[in-house]
Length: 289
Image (cartoon, rainbow, N blue to C red):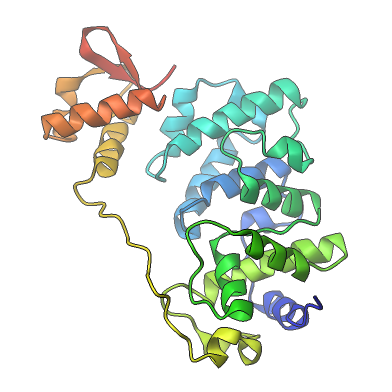
């Protein structure tokens, strides 16, 4: 398929792209990998300070690998989905022990790293190493779905048809393909947003199949899980309490963080099962050592 969207999207990106540290010339593959893991289900504004603090402390995988996993959880703070911190720590150890301290460039090696799925592997291979891969995050899937397939929102999981479409639009030249991928991603983040797309500012609005079809709504929008009072909020409160201590604490001391005993006990069991906390003697808990 000839990519008739290429020139307008790249032209828009040249004028509107945000200046983000992981996009700067000279950003290391490790820095790009850290950014991609942090950006999973987390907006840029929340990621920026955490990303900068993380790399200031651990500028290379070997620096992180030399610390206990609990320090990764502590540093992660309130970024959310803290298992990503453990996966980054495990990834740092694998990179240090098996890859000479260097993030591997091969897609096959990247997908073997903890917490690195097909999207993250393609993103690192493209943005860190200038390779030609289809990079399909939620923003890209939404843009291409509207632009070509006249669909307002993508399905929960990526289909083979979406992958084929993304691959068919990739420029042949590797660096152009990587720039196309990040440009479409940025277009989805800033213009072709999920809730209120700014179609009047879109460089390919005249070619958009969804607009030509009258912007039909998706048959079923995905439900947003309730956070207030949820086990996820409880886990976050307990982790924050554990991060704020210099050592192990008794469960009773965590009552101030979450008073509901049953929910607190359930959340603590979950944190231990996920490796985010350790259960010690005398009913004490601590970050993993």
